[in-house]
Image: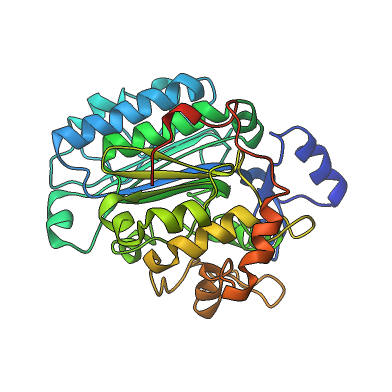
Length: 366
């Protein structure tokens, strides 16, 4: 249902989760009475395959850990083209089969596509979300696909439980033998009504420069050989990291008072600052920790990603991020060499890492 006026929308919004945005708010007919988007902290991990018993068990263990915190918030499970016996395309979470039981109905030749949401309605979204895109055997052997796992949590929850989120990210990266990934601010939009809610994400991307943009699953094939961006947490496999791993350079560029690296077995997770930064255009759209980390990891970034949005609701006022806008978004943290000292000076004003927000005893040498 579309709202008739702003007062009705305000009454509805006051009854929703903090930060919730009505569905299709920037479409011609205006907002509808479901949560179409909400800012949150999201983790994204890219890994090779989702068909082997070993990897499906790894995915299940990641979900086990996530459920410790999220089980009381999850409301729906969506399965894309589920095989017979796995369940319907949408099921209330309380009635859904356990994830390992569902896996039994998927042969190695069948890709996994699971979406656990926390929306009130089946097509609504929420800050708690766990999403799996596990590629099948033939897709993996084809060499042009990779698998994706994402999970998100409310901003306030992560601020209060920072180390729990970091630990979950590292453990998932280790289990999945992640190729690369990141975690930070994101706009979680309804995957069921993505087209109508992409403009909301596009709007937020111009307000919060450090907010990650785009559907991690649709862009995965463009990120097989390189990273997309840097964020609060950035995971990189050692094969890539070793290409830029000059200890003296890293120690001077990534000062240990603000940056820390954690080993996840097949790669390193770099934490930039105590808490995720949004890159608010009203405060600081170019956070120094991300600018300086981007300087180091830029050689590992892909040259092109083609598009971050695929919908049809693009306007002059709120254009979707496609084509040259997508390439510009990836370069948003790039600076000239002579600007380095300026941002290193800005870094001194950022809070230094502390034991409440980082595992200082798990620091690895670059």
